[in-house]
Length: 325
Image (cartoon, rainbow, N blue to C red; front, side, top):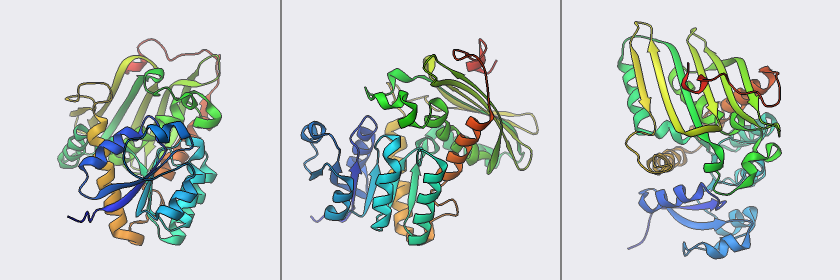
C-alpha cells in the first residue's frame, strides 16, 4: 500500500531527535524520508533505513521533503532554517527560534515573505495536563490574576552528553535562553501578550545563568512569575493559576508520565500534529509573529537579559525560591 503521508526530513540527530523519531512512528500525517547530521559517525549509527546527508542545504535540495524538523544546536538554527525557508520548505524548529532577536526577525520575515509555515516547537503547550488546565481557565468564568510557571531541573541530566547547552555562545545563554522560551510560551497561552518587568538571575562561576526569577505582566494587568533552575535536585515542571475570584488551578506537567522525560513522548506527537496542520493551511498559517510565538518568546528572553539584576557571579536564588517560597 502506498504511504500517502507527507515526507519529513529530520535535521540534527542529537538528544531531542529521538522524541521526533518516535512520534513519527505513530504519526498519521508524516513519514520519515531523510535525516541529516554533520557527524558521520552519528549518521552511520542511525538505523532509520532512510537516506542520510551531512549537509542540511543539500538534503533540502536533493531530498525535496514536504517539511523539515530542525533539531541542531541553537547556534545553527538560523542557518538551517534560512536554507529551508528559502527553498519554500515548511520548518519546525526546536526552541529557541534562533540565537538572537535579529536572527529571529529575519527568519520570521522570510517565512512571511514566502508564505512558508515556520513553527517553533513549544512541546509543553501539548502537555495533556497543561491542556486540561488551559481548558479549565477558559471555562472558569473568572479572569487570571496571577500565574506561576516552574521549570526546574539539573541541566547535566538533560543534555544527552551534548556540551553546547553549557556554552553560552552556542546556547544563547543558559537557563533563560534555553528553558525560558518554553515557560514564556505557557504564560502566553494563558495570558496572551506579556512584557518582561523584572529579572533576577543567578550565574555560576563560568558565567552561565543557572537560576532565574522572572516577572511578566499582561496587557490586562495579570502578573506572571517564571522560576527557572538548572541546578535543581530532581525535576519539577508545573503551572499554578490564581483566578480573580480567588480559586487556584494547578497542572503538574510531569504527573502520570513515569520515567525520565516521560512526558515528552506525547508532547512531540502533538508538535507533529500541529506542524501538519500548519503545512496544510499553507500561507494562511503564517502568523504575524512569523514563527507561531517563537519570535515573541525570543524577544522576552532578550528582555530578561537586559533587565538582569547584577550580583556576585555565584549568586543563587534565596533558599526555597525554587518552590516559590
